[in-house]
Length: 179
Image 1 (spheres, rainbow, N blue to C red):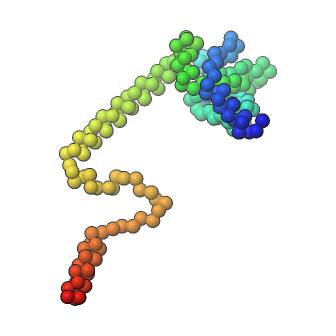
Image 2: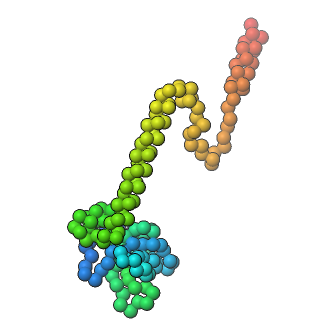
């Protein structure tokens, strides 16, 4: 199987399959990457340990700090005590929460994040509304392009009104001379 085909199947499996943790599997939160496909994770009880990323996920699926995963315990591990078996995305998280399989300690964190996001959306909506009302009050500001994005990779040409006025005057003088 080619790398592209393998990647396609792995990504499809992670995004579309719905997995419930078995009795020996645990839902854990990723605290950070420690290198060599090892991730520091924390259980709902607060226990911290390392979990390894299996070969099928490497260079195909990316996880970051704050993500949730399902891990299988490794019996002989001292530092590395688990192997990641499934990555939980938001849709999976909602379904697990509805079914009552989501750890209570993590539900408090996810609710806090959700309320923070909602308050950020409300603040953004208020600021946008304030900008719109301010823009309606002054028509002069609409001509000011100083707040627009400037691409620094291109050479910036500054146009001044003086140059355009002097160009027009020189054209008029040339016309007068011709007459």
